[in-house]
Length: 250
Ligand SMILES: [Zn+2]
Image (cartoon, rainbow, N blue to C red):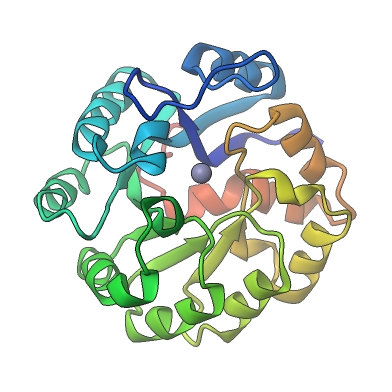
């Protein structure tokens, strides 16, 4: 089958102190990832810099850098990283969110080390007001349902599909505003994608790599035991449908 592919969730290094080491078996630099994209037919990706999701000291600067990178490279789209304990990030999010390459807010409670339930109202009320998507590293998954129900104008992607809880949260959200992505390593489970499609439908699942091998990630969907229509939804159409302005030319 022949479909376009959009990566909803990935990262790359940018030269700050919380970059991930680039080593022989896992590369994290932009040029390498773009070679991977070319090899696998991925047209574009939605990124946040590694130092912004793994550390907390350079988030503002990383967001500024990524905004510029997205302006200058057709393949780059942006998640604005928000640590709700840093007040200076709120006006930055408000200013950047209307950028034509911006797809929403990224939160990372586990690595930023705060309690997402404690700070949930602060993050999700903003997303609700801005009517935008939030991409979160999975954390306290079932607790997220109460926030999705309370803030129906936001959409929440709970990343790294790999558990029953992902599926349950999508099912339980009464406004249908919880989604997941296939990024990360856990899509190696041999029935996880198929089970999720059967339970919640392919419209709830975005494709992502999170810098793991693009050949593995795209192959996992292309060779999944699901219909071609489901594969196209995951790899391409869900991103097109939810971000029509951003991906108008893809
Ligand atoms: Zn990630």
